[in-house]
Length: 297
Picture: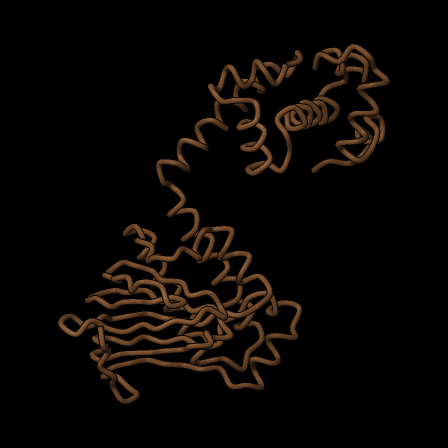
C-alpha cells in the first residue's frame, strides 16, 4: 500500500503537545517522572493521514480507532489492519509506519506516553502485542472518558503540577483497566482456573500438610507446570505459597483469638512450636509474640 499523505491538520482536529520545559519538569518530578503524557490529540475522519518514523519515537504511542479504518506496520513487519474499537500500542524506539485507509479513513484518539513505568506497565498488561487489540464496549467507553479528561486537563491547565499528577494517576489507572479487561483469553482463563483450584485445595487443608504431588494430581497438571504457574502468577513455588497462607491465617488467629502460640501452630498442623515460631518470623518478619502486640486497625 502506497500511502497518500496529507499536509498537517484535519478538520475539527484537537491536538496538544506539552512544551519542552514542562516535559523536563515532569521527567524530574517524583510524582510524575514514572508516567506522563507528552502529546495527545484527536483526528476525526483523518483522510490521507500518514506517519513514518524509521528510527521510532522516544515515546510509547497509543492509537485508538473509533471509526473507519487504518493500518500499522511495525519494524518492517507485515501491515495490519486497524478497525473501530481497535487499540494499537507502538513501543518507544520501534520503527513504524501507519496511516488511514483510503476508502474509509479512520478517526483516532492518540497519545504519546513517557516515563520510567511506561514500558513495564505496557509489558505487564500485554499491550505490546504486534497487532491491534480489540477493546470491549465497556473498556472502550472508559478509555474515551479518561482520554477526554486527560486532554481537557492538559490543554487547559498544563501549568498546574497537581493537574499533571492527576493525569499521571489517571493514565496509570487507564492502562491497568485496559490490561485487565483484555486478559480474558481462553488460555488466561484456563490458567486462572488451575490456580484457583490449587489455592482452594490449599485453603481447605490449612490445618494439615500437603505434598506437591497430590496438589498436581488434584489440579491435573504436572509438578513442573504447577511450579511454573505459581512462580509466574504469585512469585512463589506452590508449597512456599501454602506456608504463607498458613502464616497469614496464624496472624489472624493471633489478632482475633486468645489461643496460645502452641495452640495456633497445632491448629495449622504444625506440632513443633519452635518450628512454627521460626517459620512465622521468616515469613511475617516478626515473632508470633511480637506480632500479637502490634496494634491493629
